[in-house]
Length: 83
Image 1 (tube, rainbow, N blue to C red):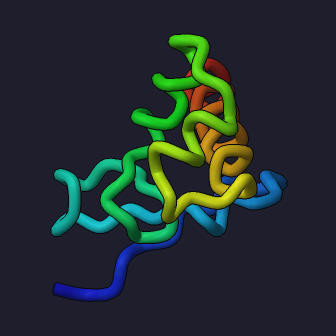
Image 2: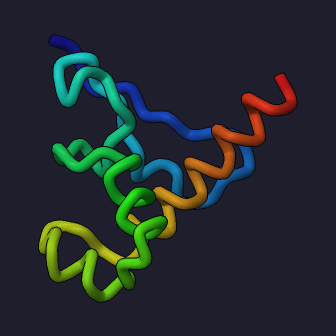
């Protein structure tokens, strides 16, 4: 398998932390090549979990990862709406 493809939507700071690898998690966008999908993090936020709780539950994450997940999701949604 090759290197993970970095997903970096234009003009979205921090999205270099998001990777997509067909061999991990079914090709879902994940945080820094970890097996933590972006959707898992944004889903936790949608359920009302605080950043602190998420960081405690996923000790490999950094605060910048949560922000990158939010930025990435926003960029993807905007792209789908405008496409």
